[in-house]
Amino acid sequence: QVQLVESGGGLVQPGGSLRLSCTASKSLESLYDMGWYRQAPGNERELVASIRSDTGPDYARSFRGRFTVSRDKTDNTVYLQMNGLKPEDTAIYYCSARVISWGPKYWGQGTQVTVSS
Image (tube, rainbow, N blue to C red):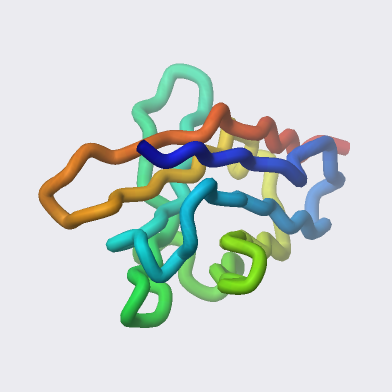
């Protein structure tokens, strides 16, 4: 099992930035991949980006350019830097992790991001 703890959400004005953090209970090298998802009210959960232990980030098309994923292996933490935020970015953002590619996906508790003036 993997425990994931997200933080960094909050209220931000349109055009602002936020950095979300996701700290895993296992080393990043022991995980097949980690991902960031979001779920807006009334919508399905959607992939924002993923990052594998042996490769760089892979972004869903609609998030390229404004969102950046990075990681700190010394801290077992993956970050999601979000710039140029829009009201439609309002959602609960979740972190996920898999130990192996065909294994279960573990989820964090989610962190609320609200973009509003």
